[in-house]
Image 1 (cartoon, helix red, strand yellow):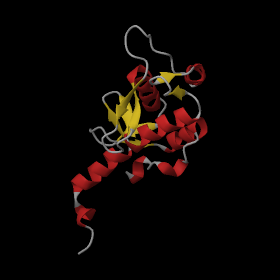
Image 2: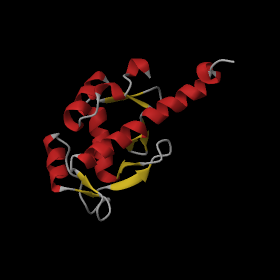
Image 3: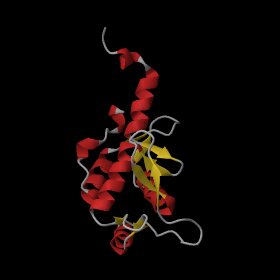
Image 4: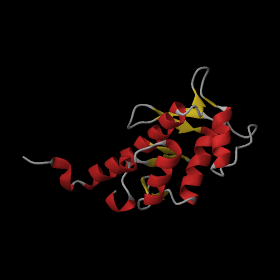
Length: 144
């Protein structure tokens, strides 16, 4: 019978959203979960007593040129359950700051006018360098 979704535009949109998207003002989908996992693995986030940004994580953010948000205005970090991955991705002020930085640095770009994003070649290199994410993990804008 063949692949039913091969010519279904809604299936392509869903796949793009599942790979990488914004969730309000932070990154989600496979990309958001991978960032959260890598930050945890590198000791930048700690889940022992609720999600917290470690001092190593604060230094890492500063090294990337990402300013730490004011604690009084918004929760610095919180988890957000990803609806496609069924695992948490990073939200809160730090999640938003990372997302904003990824757009400003040209690491991600919007696909059309929706929430789906693609990781650029520069982003693939940056996510590999800064978080150890494999370059091939996320499609570039031309393959989304």
